[in-house]
Length: 216
Image (cartoon, rainbow, N blue to C red; front, side, top):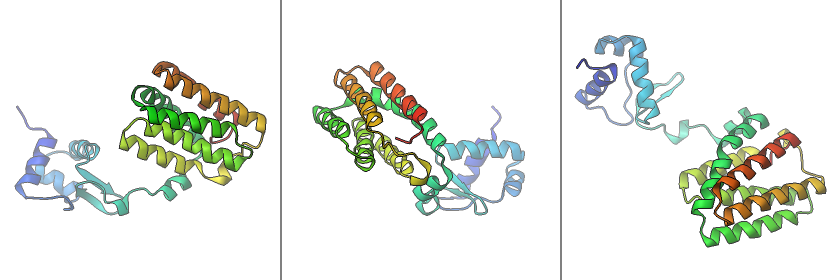
C-alpha cells in the first residue's frame, strides 16, 4: 500500500528523533523533502493539529506537541472578540446537552445545591444579585456532569458573559421572575432524571433569554 503524506511525515519525525517543542521545517522545504505536494502536506499537518500532536502560530512556524499556555487564547482575548450573539449561539449548542447529562449524572448533593441556587435566583432583588446566582446556576449544572473539561468550558463561558458594555441588565423584576421559573423547571427535570425534558427546557430558556436580548 502506498504511503500517505501523513505516513511520510510521521516517519520523518521519528527518523530525526524530534520531540515536543521542536520546530518543523517550513512547508515548502518539508514537502520537497517528503516528496509530497504542499496540499498533501497541509492535510497531514491539519490531522496532526486536530489530534493535538502539533501546533501552529502565525509568524512562529509549526511545532511538535500541544500549544504552550503562553500562546493559547486568553479569556481577555476571547471576550474582546466575542459578541453576545456569538455567546448565545455557543450556549444553544452546548447547554441543553449539558442539562441532559446532568440529569443522568448529578449526585444528591448536586441536586440539593441546584435547588438552593434556583431559590436564591428567584429571590434576587436586583441585577447584580441576579447575575451572581444565574452564573452559579449554570456552573452547577456543568459541575453535575462530573467532567473536568466540561466544567472548565462552562467557567470560560461564564467569563465571556461578564462583558458589561455588551449586555442588557435584567432590571425588570417580572423578567427576572420569569427566568427564575424557567430555572426551576430545568431543576425539576434534572431531579426527575428526565434528560430529554431538561435539555428541552434549557433550550427554551436560552432562546427566551436570547429573545430578551441579554446575556444571561
